[in-house]
Length: 216
Image (cartoon, rainbow, N blue to C red; front, side, top):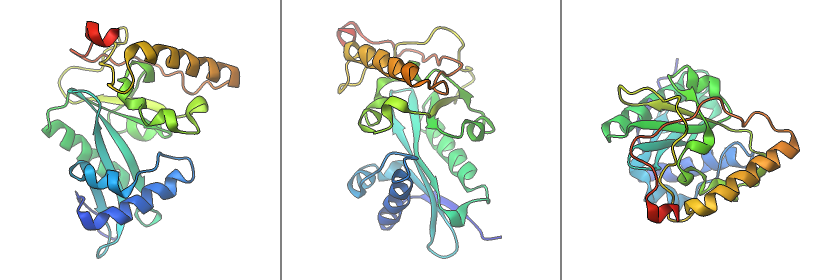
């Protein structure tokens, strides 16, 4: 069996990361990433390397709040599939997030079962920080998105089943503007008959309720 190594991304990996991610983006599986954006966030990326210098997988962390981080751009090339590559990347990203002091980690996925096997739970996508959607609102699939939100606690506190928290609003998408967008999205999906996006559990974030200024 070919040995797969999970390691921090380096500048020489940027072109291959972009090619892998954008190949899946062309199939509407994930959002595209530019080489510039990858360079700017390079410390947040991990890569999976096969024999020699062949890049066969990647994934990154994107901070949403001080306590919540997202797994994004998780991609495995055909040469790395069937070898546990995706699982190992996620496990390493979880360790990275824990070391950085995050309390919870989340992802949007078409394969929630894969994440559930790694300790994630399906959660209410609309209770996660609006920062999660800053890029998604530009996606052509936004109004008929079939991705599911999953989250995992990185502390001893479990994912709460209480009412969803209003997480801190993005500086690009204020809470007041977020609520009509949320309703419009749900209305669009109801008209289209989309049921898969109605997730089962809310996610409770500690200490992330919007300030009075943000709520206005």
